[in-house]
Image (cartoon, rainbow, N blue to C red; front, side, top):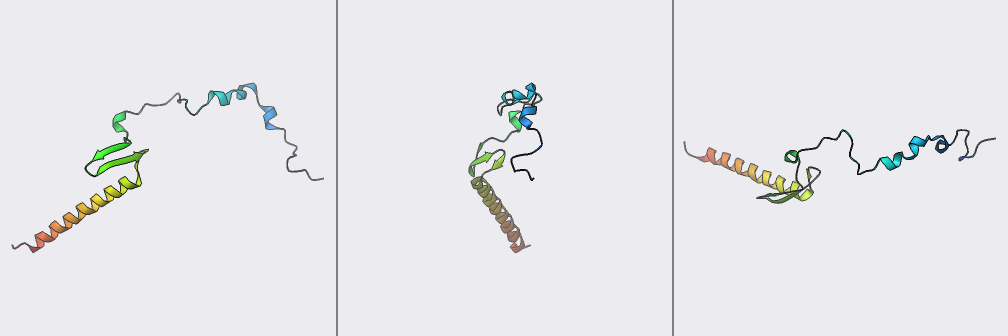
Length: 95
């Protein structure tokens, strides 16, 4: 006779727990700090906001948001355009 889906010959795992496992979920929380945690100096971390001549660039976990990425990309394109223009001017100058 086949077993139903919720029936099996395996023992229930919850019954096999030892007492030391009962309070494990209480000891581990998302706010607890690991024992071997190294403090990160603030000098090497990326701030959430950086004021630049391009405007305020916002970051999350060290990565720029879409607006900051677009501003930096546009500034780089503008700079590259100026470099090309100056290079072309040098070609047209009399020698």
